[in-house]
Length: 441
Image (cartoon, rainbow, N blue to C red):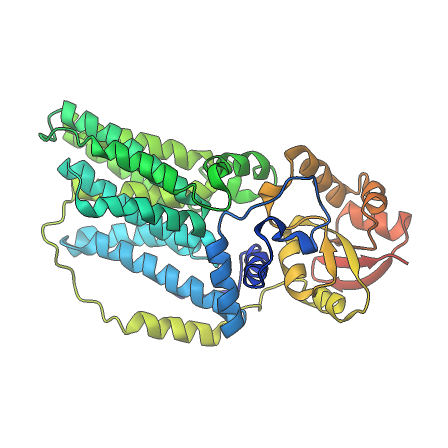
C-alpha cells in the first residue's frame, strides 16, 4: 500500500483519458472524441477502446478532483492484491504461501496505476481462476458462461479483453492434452468452443467493433518504437525477476515430478511465457494467468478456508492514502499549462509525446497539440519522423509552416530547443524542470 501511494498521478495518459470522459458526458459524437485539441488529421476517425473507464475517470474527477484518480488506483490496486492474496493463502500452509505472496506483490504493486489497464488485470485474474477450474476438473459449469457478457463489459473498459478468448483457447488445447495423457478422465466439453466464439463476438461490441481484435497488434507495431512498456521484455527489467522466479519454480517442480500428466501445464507455461516476452507490459497479465493453475497443481489447496481479513482495514488505508497524497505533486508542466490557460491567445503547439497529458489537463480549452497519448492514432512512419523532429530539430520548420504553429513545448536539453532558440528565434516564455515553452514572436 505504501509503495502504491509513494507518488501522485504517474500515468501520462490518465489526463487525456479523463478529458475524453468529459467529452463523452458532454455528448460529443464518438467519431469526434479528442478532435478538439488535435492538429493531426489523416482522415481516419479514431475510436476509444476504453470509453467506460474514461467515463469513470471523468465522474471521479468531477466529484473528487484529481484525487478521484488516486481513489480509483487505490481501490482497484488493493482489490487485485487482496484477490491474489486470497487465492495464494486459501487452504495452504503459511510457510509455503508467504514467499509466493511476496513474489506476487513485487510484480503486482508497480502495476497499480491510474489507468484502464488496471481494470484489465482484474478481469485477467478472474478468467485465469476460471481456466484453472476447467483445466483441473475437465468440465464447464453454468457460471463459466457469464464470461461471454462479461467480455463485452471488459472490452469497453480496456482493450486487453482479447485475453478472454485467448485464455479459453489455450486452456482448451491444454485440456485436450490432459485428456490424452489420462490426467483428466472426462470427455472434452465441446461447449468450450462456444464460449471461445462467444467471447470473440462479445468483445467486438464496442465503438471499435472488429478492429478491437487487432488493436493489440496495431499498438505493438506503432508504439514499440517510443513507448517503453511496448518494448520487448528484457531480463534486466525489474518486473522480469518475479515472473522469471515463477517460471523457474514451475520448471523445477516439473523436473522433480517427471510425469506426462503435467504436459498440459507445460503447454500453458510455454505459451504465456512467450506472450510475456513479446512486450514488457505483458509480464503482469502472463503472471496472473500462470499463477492459479500452477498453484493448484503443485501446492493444491486443502480447503476453501482462509483467514478472515478485517475488511475495515483496506478502506481505511485507501482513505488515509487519498488524504495524504497530493495527486499532482510530481506533475511537470503545471506552470507551463497555467501560463497557457491564463493567456488570452490560442496556441497551436508542437509538443513532445510525454508532455501531452499535463498540457491538456492544465492548458485550458484554447490549445491544440500536434500529438497526444493516443499512440494508435498516428501512422508509424509519420510518428517516427515527428519524434526525430521534436528531439533533434530535423524538419521543425516544415511542421511550423504546415500546421501554422505558434508555440512549442520541448525538452530543454534537446537539439529542437536550440532550433527554436537560435534559428527560428522564438521567445523563451516559460521554463519548467526539463521542459521549455517557446512562443512565436
